[in-house]
Image 1 (tube, protein in one colour):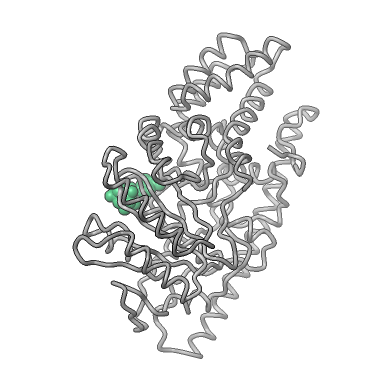
Image 2 (cartoon, rainbow, N blue to C red; image 1 turned 90 degrees about the horizontal axis):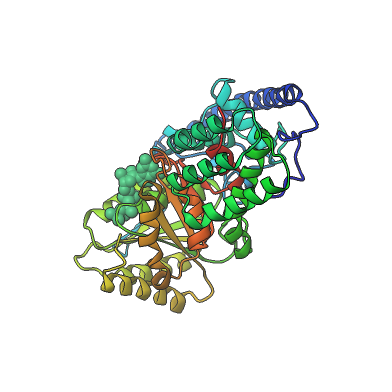
Length: 461
Ligand SMILES: Nc1nc2c(ncn2[C@@H]2O[C@H](COP(=O)(O)OP(=O)(O)OP(=O)(O)O)[C@@H](O)[C@H]2O)c(=O)[nH]1
Ligand SMILES: [Mg+2]
C-alpha cells in the first residue's frame, strides 16, 4: 500500500494522539466547508440548466430525473467513478431518449424513460462522526480537502454502515482484547479465531498471523501499532492479486469495445450489479449497452430492462422461449459495434457449477465474444454474495474454468457478518476484487479499494 502521499498521517507515531485528532478534525472541517460550497454552486448551476432547458424545450419531461454528473469541475472526478471523462446533463439526456433495442428490433420512439436514479443522489449530511471518519480515510489516501466529493464521503458512509455487522463481531472482540497493553501471544490466538469467524479463511488467517507472530517475537508491539500493522497486513493480502493483475482499478478502456460478463450462482446479485454498473458507466461518461443473456427465467428480461431504463441504457434481449444466450450476445455485439458503444454488460443466468449444460452455455457465450469481437477487452466477473461467505466462494470457484474469471464483485456486504470473505477471495481464489456492493440502491456499488475496505472493516468507532 502506497502511503507516500499522506497529507494527514493518521498513524504518525511521532505525534501525540491529541495533535493528530486536531489535524484530522481541521482537515475534515475544511473538507466539509468545501463540499458545502460545492453543493451550493451545483444547485445554482442545476437550476440554471433546468431553466434554460425548460426555455428551449418545455415539452421534454423525461429528463428531470436523469443522473447528472455532479461535479465536472472537480479535479478528482476520474478517481471518484470508474473513468476519466465527464458527461454533461444533455449527453445523458440524449442517451436516455435514444433508440432502444429490444428483441433484436429497433424501437426509435423517444418514449419517456422512467429514471429514478436521482432518488439516490447523495447529499451532504451533517458534520458528524461518520463524516469525520470518512474524511480521515480520504486524507490518509493523500487527498486534498478541496479535492473530495460528496460521492466519496457518501460512499464511505455506506461502506462503513455495510460492514457494521462484520465489524461488531470482529472489531469489538479485537479491541476488547487489545486494551491498552502490548500484544501478547494470547491476543493473537484470539485474533485468529476472530478472523476465521469473519470468514477470512484458513489461508489468509494463517498468513496474517504468521507475520504478526514473527513481529511479536522480535519486539514489543503496542496496541495502536498492533492495529496499524494488522491493517497493513490485511491490505497487502487483498492487494496481492490486484497487483499481480497489473491493473489497479478496472476501468473500461476508451476507444474500444469492453465486454463485461457477470457470472455466478443463483441470486447473488448479478443483475443488480449490472444495473449499478450501467449507471456508474453512464455517470462516468461511457456509452454502455446491456445484453439480457439470462434467458432462463422469463422475468429476467423485465428486471434487466427496468435497470436499463433507470440509467437510460439500451437493452438487447430476445424474449422468445428457449432463446439462446449466445445468440443474444451475438446480437448485442453487433448492436454495440454499429452504435459505437464502448461497454457491453452481459447479464447471465444464475447457475450451479454442477449443471454441466449451463456451464457449457457459458463457454459458448465466451466463444461467441472471442470470435465476433476479438479486439474487445473481455472481463469475466464473478459475483459473490458476501453473506454466503466461504461456502459461496467454494461454489463459485468452480466457475473459474468455464468462465475464465478475471475478477470478483462482492455484493451484499450490508447485512452480512462475513465481510472477511474478501480476504478469502484474495488468498484462495487469487482473484482481484473489482467492485463491492453494499445495498440495493443504484449507487450502492463502487470500485474496490483495499485501503478503504480495511479501514471500514476495522473502524474503531
Ligand atoms: N442488501 C443487498 N441486497 C442486494 C445487493 N445486491 C443484490 N441484492 C438483492 O439480492 C436479490 C437478488 O439479486 P439479483 O440481482 O436478482 O441476483 P441475480 O444473481 O441476478 O439472481 P439470478 O439471476 O436469479 O441468479 C435482490 O433482491 C437484490 O435486491 C446488495 O449489495 N445488498
Ligand atoms: Mg439475474
